[in-house]
Length: 168
Figure 1 (tube, rainbow, N blue to C red):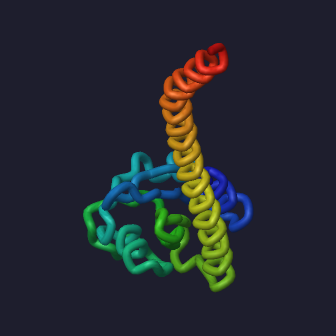
Figure 2: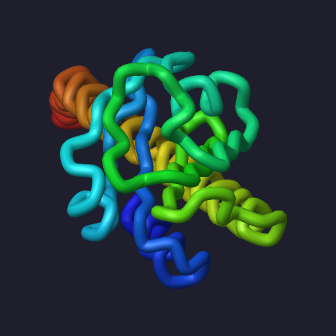
């Protein structure tokens, strides 16, 4: 899902520099990054929820746009990125979109990115639910196997007793 979102950001939004971070505990970890973003930005840091532009946008659950992200003083090198947009993907993570030009994002860019993020949140929620259902089914199958095994012995005893009783 994260790769589909980054590809969509590149192909539909027209911004080749974007990435998706997914939340793990209290951290936002890189899940997918476009080739261009990797080339321009290099290795990206892990943000804590509430830390840096991405962490703050995720924590606030609202899109944050910086016309020039170099004005953010948080110790992270954004190298060739200037304008940056951080869009929460529900409670799953954050979509970060960047551009080399200052003040590049307009309302339609924001709206499209938010639609991408909302669809990604829905897909990730469905994946989570599907995984939960698979785990529940595995537990039910295991339970059924144990119950089946536990019932076989008493049923075999009853069956044997009935055969003896019928034979008399």
